[in-house]
Image (cartoon, rainbow, N blue to C red; front, side, top):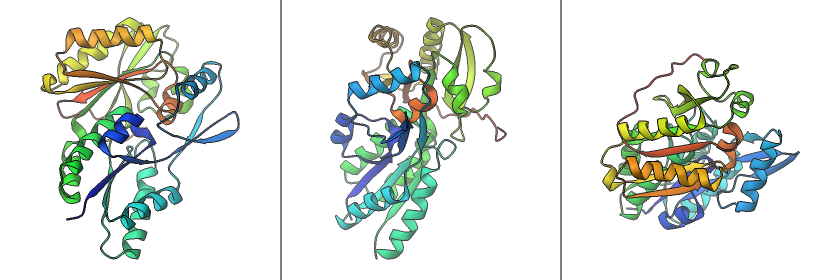
Amino acid sequence: MKPVKIITDSCADLTGELLEKYGIDYAKMRYTYKGVENEAILTWSEEKIHELYNVMREGERVTTAQVPAEEYTQLFTKYIEEGYDIVSISCSSKQSSSVNTSYVVRDELMAKYEGAKIICIDGLNSCIPLGVLVIEAAKMAQAGKGADEIAEWVIANRKKVLQFSTVHSLKTLYKAGRVKGAAAFFGNLLGVKPILISDVNGYQTGFKKVKGRQNSFIEIVNLLKENIINPEEQTVFLAHSDCDKEEVELLKNMVKEAIPCKDIYVCYIGPIVGGSIGPDAVALSAWGKEVTFDAGEEK
């Protein structure tokens, strides 16, 4: 049986530390601001992180683009020629077309390389929940599991990754138009903070709303507490888009006090999700009860 390489994309928001630890590679999306296109590199420096979110605070629009076909071609070819089977887990198809591009490249390369195996999966998540799913797949690969077994597990468990997030400002979400059910949350209500989740279909959607930043933190912690399973065995992931260190520490301590988790891992929301959600957003993610909330198919 061939070894398996786990591949994701820039939306997974995994740090360089996690990519190296679990042997994960990723296909790079693109983002543009001030007229310059950049590769969405997950090993970006804090200087670049602050630069991106500061220009957004100043009103600059950041646009994003899916993984180019040639990026998937180069990445898949590299690992096929190194003797790997590939399991590629992409950002939700309801939020990016990258997974559809991966299907096309998969078919082309499997026709070209006899015996090649490339399994491409819609992760039904974005941001760190996608990363959490990818990490578990990578652990299975490191344990010697085959591509088919890993893929079957991912498909069976991708709706069990929890995500509860909130934003500081509605402006970026409104401009990006990426959030399902946005009309219910965008208005002139002073201080309204939407609580966002990935629904059963993979849409990023407004789930509920509260008044005030502090209340939004309380709400996402409570939602995680209500839905997490076996917290003592888990690392809770806290991702943020360049929040103040004091706010991050506050939220981290709130999680510690409410949930008896094994650890809390703090990381940044990358430029692709960040371009849509804006600066000062926070997201909590862990494994829990299967997601059943359905925002529906109508935009």
